[in-house]
Image 1 (cartoon, rainbow, N blue to C red):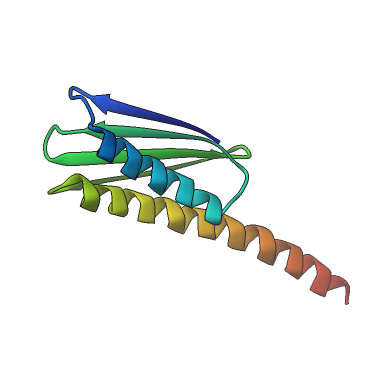
Image 2: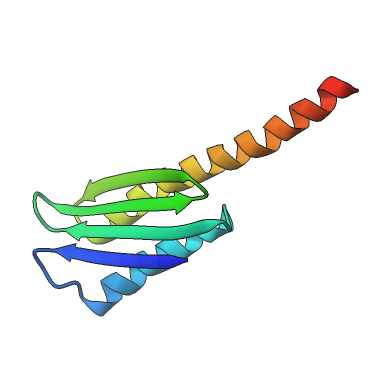
Amino acid sequence: MITNVTARHFKAWPELNEAVINAANGFTKYNESITRTDIILSEENGKFVEFTVHVNGHTFHGEATGDDFDKAIHGASDKIVVQLRKLKEKLTNHKAKDITEFL
């Protein structure tokens, strides 16, 4: 998985980079087919974090703003996790329905 971190109009400190990369690596728990994750950090109008995750032709987007980057990271990553779970559920339930139709 390729992970790109962009800090807009400020220099991200190493702990912040590590935190967002760890959050992005956690997405593989829900889908191992993730090809690329783009992360954008900004300090304009509060602390802003945006994740864009690419999975086999699907693109998921989650963003959040908070008082600090920890809250924003958790908010944005939770939105991505919900979307990844929904994709997994669609793929697994879709196959199960097809099998039961033939029985």
